Image 1 (cartoon, helix red, strand yellow):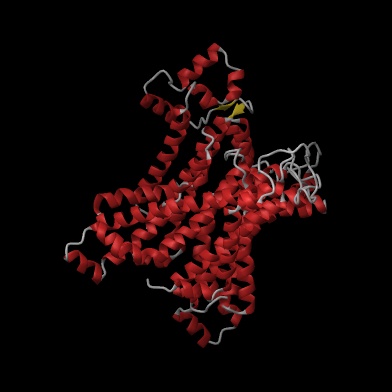
Image 2 (tube, each protein chain N blue to C red):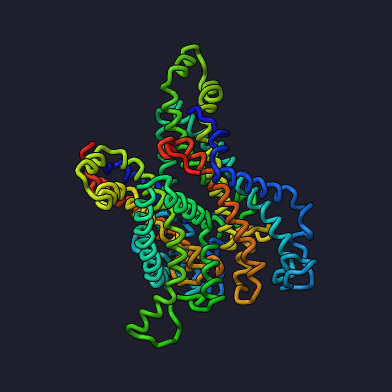
Length: 281
Length: 323
């Protein structure tokens, strides 16, 4: 389990590309108020403006500046992605390791719940809930993380089970180490690579879901989001406005997801030497 | 091997869905009938109808009797009535199902076959130029959100070139029959089908490629080479065939998830399948239809996974002998 991720990333062009791209998106998201020329929701009297020096990407059907919406969209996307993935990864780490260490009935019940939730497609539950309660951004993040920890918990439990059998763990146990001590001192550090893969794929899933739900019109309409922009633009795609309205959010979303995919694939390859026996770069 | 434990699992999953379907509308503040039936029903609401509906859902009874009433109507195949479409929910769903089946079925077959062939070619000569470009290309493709792939095709071929229709599954009021009708359907199918196929190739390709890595190390590959078999026979008859199983399993699981998988593509192309029905129901707040489709979706997911589970040992004798 001891893998030098830094070296793996250095040798892999996919990963370098992914990291640079994701960092760029992060910078845009963090400094959105400085970068965006207008407030994303402030309306001007001029709708359907083509690109000009005032509005680099023109304005939309209600006269909002598209470039500003695009920049603030990065915020929504990454905020949802990172928070939902972080929550889900923490949940899966806690639940997975506790199931492995406590074992017995607790383990059985947890694993049945995990299995049941893995079968049900998360989007069905989210659409059902969202149809009744229009979720705010934070409710959405909570929903996504509550539906996103199960797969990770199963993998982490399996890994923790095999770690549990190792010599240094039983040695610590024989010295009277508690489960909590074992988890934080010995198990979680060894699980770090797996947790990082879970985290990365969690980001990807959450960003994808957020965009999709906004595209469906389920998400909070006051939050600017790439998915929402694409849905609005799609209604007017027969006008000649898609070049600067529909394409930019789509490209931004695709690039973000692509960067996360590349990073995830590299980490996964590093964890599974079978796939990496001949380096792909 | 299939067991009672697995069956229990599917029952638990089904129960979670049923409980959500049952609880959500009833937990909403305000009139539960409004939450169960949506705004459209209120327009047509008469005291008699209201009394009938209260009776039907046992809304004046304790919650467990309400749940029992809910389950018993479901078991008779009654998914409720849509006041938006003015038809029973089951009828609305069945009317849309063929389009989704046509679109997803074709896309699944094409993308799985293409994915397998590309995966075998790629896995056979790993790290070759061809492998690298295929891997990069298909990984990039799988990174694209499906609705954006759809939108790009729509803009490119539908709007700019204008050679494919922008929406729908047939030309309305065209009066086409026979071959003309089939051509019209294919014409409408082409863009959503291409979008869906492109989005699905990546998965089966990566899976085949990764399985090939393990298969190629097996002793029987060495034997095949020693026998002096041709490259092609080794690649497809020996390696490829043994790398098939996970991909076929995946296709089975995907079939169960077809409505969620095709949801966005159907919306982009306004293709009148079940995915678009979900969208319409969301916009119209037509809760009976929404609940009905989602219930069918969950049910088909469970059935497909269950069948894959059961047939797995039949597809791969190694699993049967291992037990």
